[in-house]
Length: 78
Image (cartoon, rainbow, N blue to C red; front, side):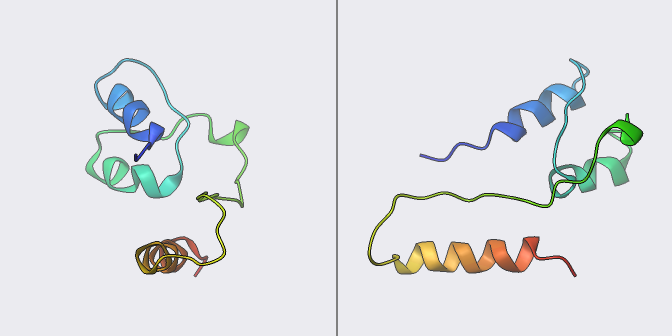
């Protein structure tokens, strides 16, 4: 199962059904394209944490390790 709730919120915001508080990486292109604008920046503070969770096990499957490495490379501050 894959659950990425911000995609639903992103779609609702783009289609004019309200505002959404979403991580910058999820809306970067939409803001650049002009489909979304940033609101309330003075009231929202940066969040320094992003969690990726998976079931505990002694060994990490190769495909999970590849995903962890991919996410780490994309979300690590430059």
